[in-house]
Length: 458
Image 1 (cartoon, helix red, strand yellow):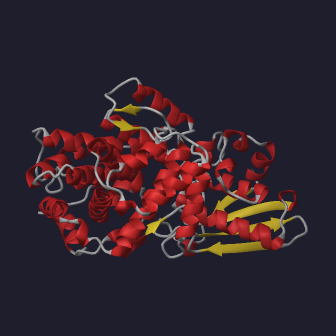
Image 2 (cartoon, rainbow, N blue to C red):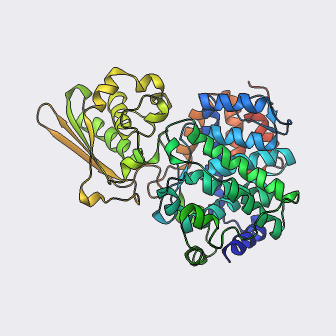
Image 3 (cartoon, helix red, strand yellow):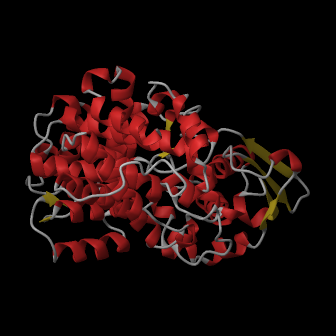
């Protein structure tokens, strides 16, 4: 039974079984997520959620980038929403199927519970990798079907990943761990129709909170089906129309390898949907190499898979959130500004007249060789100028992909860029150092006190 296999993995894994490469990648993921959460705290969606949770719940865990505590589930909810607010967080593609965002669903739940119970950095790393691996194994069975049906898999799969992580932290036995997964499966949800709105990052917050709630309820004696990943009414079959036999067969082949290393985790160099990154890479390269000025452009072709417009659904964006899911906007802003950083994704930039005019010259083309699916985040940009010249650049593997990765120094630089929004330089340095040596921390509260301003900012 698939559920039994997953439960035994959760209850049986120990910190000593984590290879050094897994620990190193995990620390990079945690640092990256902390950075985008600090930066995301300034977004309107984060401020609304923070105000809501400030008025509810007991002071058990802190909200990152704020100066208050709330209940452990509400802290996970707020931090998960903030972490995904900029769409700047990591993503994972299991077996080249469909990407989802793992860390924003798992880490906020772990930090909240870890702070409440004063757990160590090793406890955090073990819980993180437990949740990540469980989520990846379930994803291999049903992610493509769920995504195609319109579910936001960051939320659906993330709810189970977070539940697995918190079950590990609370040291639940096999029976209660299975029940936690059952509860989380009924809490899971999130619709892709909400991409480009505040509700998309809310999905990550929901997943984090679902995991906390599910594990705590199971610990307290709440009941749920103990085989939620098996049978005709299971998580995979109902949300993804995936039969039980296929689920079991696919996951038996995963062995004991950790997917965070075996498949690789992608870190974003740009704060937009991962499906735009190849286009930003290509556009920035063309602008630099050919010295292209926006006023000289007649036409821009985005040669992609025919499935890409189903993800990048905002062709004439009017907000920064919509711009993150607009290939046209990302190409336009890269050409006009020559960069794609946090400051390029603002409502003011999206409404800029020059940007809007250039977007009218950008259109999709779907040549047969680009296919119709979403297995690879690739494409080609073709720019035609008034003087008759044309320039093109194809990108098959975007920066940040595990096959073209960002290194530790680039992740640290990204963290500093994000953290400076909320933290002083001294606090940024301290938090970076602590995150980089997370396994040496005896109480995660030491780090959370910096991130939540309990430690005085210099």
